[in-house]
Length: 248
Image (tube, rainbow, N blue to C red; front, top):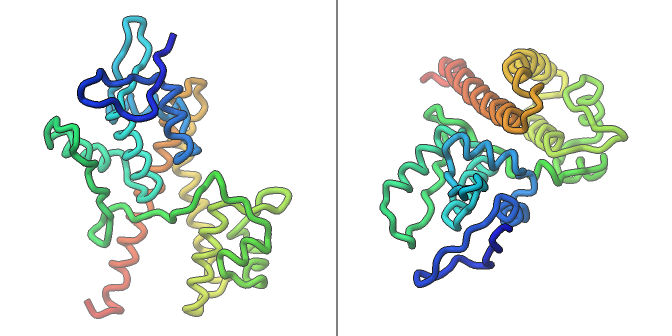
């Protein structure tokens, strides 16, 4: 029988409460609705958290483990940091000593020095907008949205709903329109993205086809990091290409 999870961490005079993986999932779900047991197992396999094991092999997590998981999930969701960077920050945390009162390491914002760029803070699993809602939240014009759909730059989900990525696209297009760029100028973005999708799909498909949940979680993580690296490369190439125009 699993040990019950305490509502708050135990004090120093008491043995720390241990939680099953299902109880940890319940702790994290309100803040991270997309997290799954497969994701938690994947993060363990990557060495980001090391729960204790019972003699029967069941995972048991302490509150420090939950704090580490919350840090990892926050870094991925809010700043799109790759696991390599998160692992380095956790290593700094581990090296700061065993003091139970120490805080979490700071999330390192990435920037123009070549680090992975930040991610739009939208709730991918929660955003579900109709056409009017998308226009209101993104600021895109109705005529521009119609043209984006005609060109295939933005495609709604049947029967006409728009998700978080559609919101990001529409918001970015609205911002570019303020500088005079029109939807027809963005067709190249769609074509370039399709080529990258084909390339990356070859890398993640073998994992995604496996029945093992851990392999599918690794496929999703691989895809996420490939996207982040692609954004990093794209931003650097644009900076290099604009140097002569800027006289730098």
